[in-house]
Structure formats: structure tokens, C-alpha cells
Length: 409
Image (cartoon, rainbow, N blue to C red):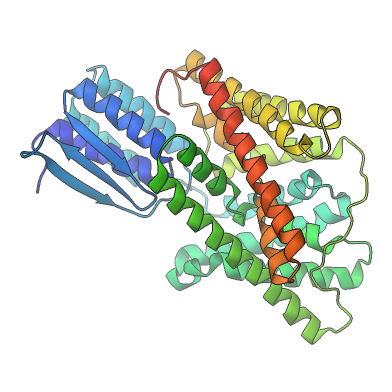
């Protein structure tokens, strides 16, 4: 069934684009509702991680459309262009037909003019991730090399669909093997930390936090489905790392297996160095507009610093969770202030920042503990993951209450 009007067709096209760019259910539904009101289309909207339902009119004449698509990767550049286009159509500066044409041009535009850029950038995410996790220069060097290998695998996966379906598993195997082999020649290397940092971008920490945010905002179907997807991703990564460790030990019996090791106390400035190096790399991977880089660095650094400063002042048991709340609160306030002042999506600043705060590595450690049959450690870590993820969501919700955003994105 074709849409009854150009306005309805434009709303459906916007729903498809937002879903393809990985936007959460509450943002998709809120933006579609606001856009529908501006265009005079009476509609209801329901978003899940794999589809969006759009219904126009009232029963019994109601018309329902299913927009089925796989949620794609975050593309902040296209999201910013889409936001500007939606604003122009909502204000009447463009009609819906012209808007649909320009939307098609945005969607079909290539995000990566230089295919080698993500390959080069991956090490600049993995290496500083090692510093953020408590490692030193040695772990950063090894993690950067692992990140390069994972980036090469990702390039291959984009050209071969069967490889793409096993991307998480294969990337984890490669990271585990590389870190274990490096440990043969570098006795002081923290193998577990280097492995986790090398696959930092494979961790579904952002999906986990988004899922809890969706549940907290009342979108239970989307939130629980996304949570299940994040759990399966954790399992794939953990199984891949375990397989890599078994493979290395079988070939080189003297190699160290993937086992936890105490992280020595490092200089306090290393995490900040890691943050400042990781932020530009993450923005490149997310295709963030360059014009917003200053705001992203300022807000993310402020949020990270607030969390780091609060941690020593809080109770040891709840310290990390409360610090995560403070970090998310600062990040949310800064992102909403940016959106209000610039009339651009808050997600342009929030997503790169939250990506470096999410508890993805903690979730992986929980699943890895289960695989080692260390149930007590697994449950303890899983509980900590839930607390930190809930704390992040709480901080973002409080930020929206204190300084509400003016629009859905």
C-alpha cells in the first residue's frame, strides 16, 4: 500500500533513516510524532531494534506500514544533515516531496570517501582504551597493534557477508591470539587488558546502555530486545577470546592463557591522555562533523574529569556507580546545552562521550568469568555492570529534567 500523501511518505522515509542510523526507540518515536504534528498527519509510531511500525489515521480507516531494516552503525554526519532537513520541512521551507528527494541523497551518500581511514583509526581507539582501562605504554602499544588487525578484519567483513556475521567472534579470536603471542616476548604485558582494549569497539556497551535507557523511558519491547542482542554479542566476544586462548596454549604450551591479572597503579594522567587521543578517533569512526569536534572534546573531557574527581570521595562499594551518574549528568547537561545553543542534535556530542563511559568491558569480564566457571566473580561483575549502566541512564535522565532538550534528537 502506498502512502496516501507526500507528507506521510516523508515521515516513513525519516523513520527508515533514523532506524538505519541506530537511533534509540524513544528518540525515533518522539521525532516522528513531532514531525507528524507539524505536517498535519495523525500518526502512531512503534520502534524496535529491527523494525518501525507507522500507523496513520484512526480505526477503522487506519493504515499501518512496516519499515523493516537492520539497525546500522552510528553515522553522526548523516544524522546532523537529516536533522537540518527535517527542521526545514517542519518549518515549511521545503515541501515533503523535495524533502524526500534530499533525504534519499543523504542516505545514499557514501560515508567513507577514503576506505583506508577506519583501518588507520582503529589503533588510535584501541591504544588509548588500554590507558583508560588502567594499562601503561606497553599495553597501549600491543592494543594498538591488535586494533589494526581488528580493523583489517572489519574491512574484509564489509566485502563478505558470511564474515560480517562472524565479525565479533573472529575479531575476538584474533585479539586473543595476538595478545597471548605478544605475552611470550613481553613477560610484563597484561594480556587480559591488552585483549579487551584491542576489541574495545566490538564491545556492545553502548547497546547495553541504550537498552536500559529505553526500558527506563517505557519502551520495554525495544529495550529488552536490544538487551538480548547485547548479551549475545558479549557471548560471541567471550567465546572468541576463549577459543583464541585455547588455540595459542595448544600450539605454544608456555604461552599465558587469558587470565585476569592485577592492574598496577599507574600515573593519574594516563587515562586523560587516553581520552584525548581516543575522542578524535571515535569521532572519525562515527563520521562526526568536524565543526562540532570542539564541543565533543570539551563536554566529554568535563564529564570524564567529573567522574574521576568524584571516585576517591565516594564509598568504595558504590563509588564507581555514583561517579558514573555524575559523569553522565555532566555529559547530558553539556550535550543538551550544545543542542540548545546550536540547534543541532545533542547526539552529536553525547554519543562519542557516552561510548567511552559505557561498561562494555565490565560486561565482557562477567561473561568471561562464567566461561572460567568462576560464578561468584561473574555474578559480582554482572551486578556491577547493571549498577554502572543504570547509573549512566540515571544521570542522562536527570540531565534531561534539569535542562530539557528542545527536540527529540
